Length: 168
Ligand code: HEC
Image (cartoon, rainbow, N blue to C red; front, side, top):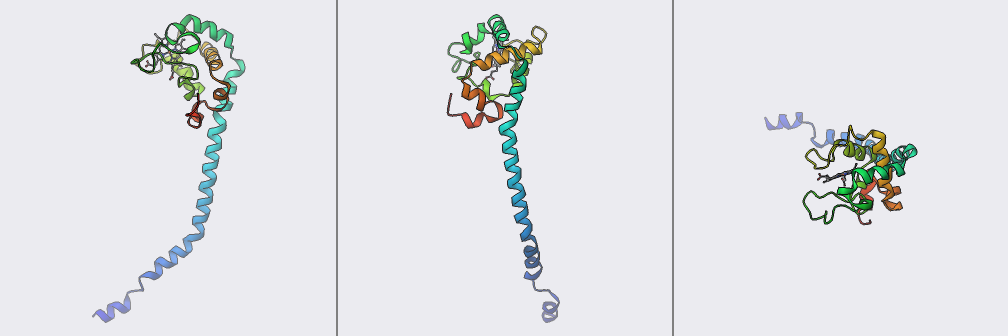
């Protein structure tokens, strides 16, 4: 009985060994393709936010943004966007919008929607939609960017903020 069975059973290692041998060249291809994808994703993340902010900045008027800031924002966010006194420790204090805050961690589109539709739903900051237009918000954004260090403005906004976490 056992003799017959052992003759019929194929050597267990053979099929696996053949499959593994056939797959090996494919793993190289997959590894190369994945490396390419990672590099492409990295390049996309590095360049996309910059081109987006250049687009937004092209027609925006920072001087108009500054006038709007003095009228609607300075009471909470302070002169030149330094933030409400002690905002880092104060619960729900109005944060700095200059380089010492983290407004620059957000991309242009997100900052504009934060200004028009509130940063968070239960914020004491009003939604400016209806009072300010989208162009006004872009002008405000252009002014807020003048409060950032040139290095942060050019290299660190939005998706790229992680590479700048140790500097202000
Ligand atoms: C009544 C106070 C108040 C006014 C006025 C106000 N804000 Fe705010 N703002 C806040 C608070 C508070 C937050 C933080 C979110 C929270 O916890 O509610 C905030 C958050 C923000 C953020 C997000 C910052 C970040 O680091 O994520 C931006 C951008 C912003 N405000 C822009 C503006 C602009 C532009 C104006 C004027 C048009 C303005 N704010 C007027 C209180 C205010």
